[in-house]
Structure formats: structure tokens, C-alpha cells
Length: 300
Image (cartoon, rainbow, N blue to C red; front, side, top):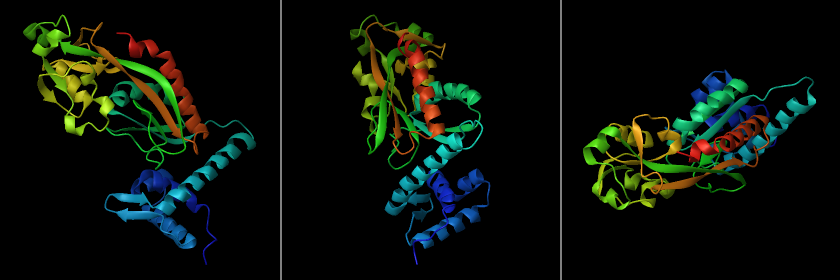
């Protein structure tokens, strides 16, 4: 008869829901993968529901699984509260937090900042997920997200963190070969590096169109890093965020006073986990960093 279950099985359920595969969940829990599989099967039997759809791609939550996930995370939050406020002695925040963002800001900004974060919070493991599309926090694909547009979803806590500037850049070799543009009108005579149009998952990321509709695109890539390297190698002019272009001495600004645009920065977290100590520690750090780095992100 359903109704009685071992609530310690929720630990295994949460980890598998977050990892999506048995082996990563087992490594995180420091058990054998067969133990994870058995505990999940027992939980499903006890509750008389199917919590995961199994496939070659891993374990995906069913509708019942999503409902249990929300409840299980609330239990996890309360458990953290007990440990952090009731048990004697101070305890540093610990555990895993999955942070999702786009490739460019993940590689050229967040990865360096997270090194500082981990030095101050060694018990928190931040998993940085870089995607071309917006991660769905409502379906628990990540715990926290940094995006250029407000993410969609239910019960999300979203904060605008400021903005960042983008300018045109080219290599010294390219400008020597093709000449340096002196006006927006001059850009029609130049070669550009751009995104693969039909692979742009978020229209706001196709930011070159804010400045010019290039007549000559000589290199396209879905990767911002690949575009930056192509431009630095002399392929053409590229539009880049300052946070990435500033790290590359091979690039020279082109028409920075007139040819620029900007995007917002949005931090989002699901309301159910917003006050977990490890999540709260990370989001507080990120808010402080974006505020402190306003000029770095916006002044060429």
C-alpha cells in the first residue's frame, strides 16, 4: 500500500534529478550506481508513481517527478536551516550549485570570478553550464542563471544586475589590409565575423544587427569564442562584449564612440531554493561582482 516511504530516498532522488544520469549521481553521493538505481526504484514503488522517464539520454523527470522535486527541495531547504541555525557551532555553506549562462560570459568573465568565489567558499562546488539557449530553471535544469534577457518560467526570482557594452573590434593585420573605418557608412566596405543565423537560439544575441547589416560576412560560428579568435587572426570585424575583448590584446576597437550597443544582465533563481545557504551565498557574490565591475563591463 502506498503512503509509507524512506525519506532518505529523497537524497538519491534529488541527486539523480539534478545530474540526469546514474553514474554522476552515484559519484556525488559516494555510492555504487546500482544503489542509486535501487533506491529510486524503491521510492517509486513506495509512492506508486513513475518519477523518471528512462532513455539512452538519461533520466528525465515525469510530471509526478517534478511535483516531488519541488517538495523534496523544500525539505532540503528546511534541513539546511536546521543545520545552519539550530545545530551548535558555526557551519560554512556547502554543497553543489549549478550556474547556467551563455558561453561568452561564462568563459570570459564568470569562470575567473568563480575562482575568487571558491577561494572564499571552498565547501561550495559551482558547476558552470554554458549553453546557447536559455536554461529552464522551472524544470530544474540549473539552480541559478545569468542571462542577457529575463528568463521565462514560473516562481522565478529575477533581478536585473546592470548591463554590459559591446563594440566592434578587428586585428591590426586586418585594419592594415582593409583600412580603418572612419564612419558607420564605411562599414559597408568591410568584412565581418558573425553568428550562424539559423542557429541563434536567442535573438538578442545576434547583436551585430544593432549596428549594421553586413554585406560581406566571411566567417560565421555559433561560438562567440570562435568568432573572437577568427577576428583576432585577421578574418574580419566582429562585435564583442567588452568583458571578452578586453582580455585579447590582438584586438583593436573600431569606431567605439559611435558603433556600440548594450545588453542587460539578469540573475534568476527558483523561489524554492533561493534561500538555501549555498545558493544565497553565490547569488550575493554575483550581485556584488556585477556592481563592482560596472566600469569594466561598460567602459572601453
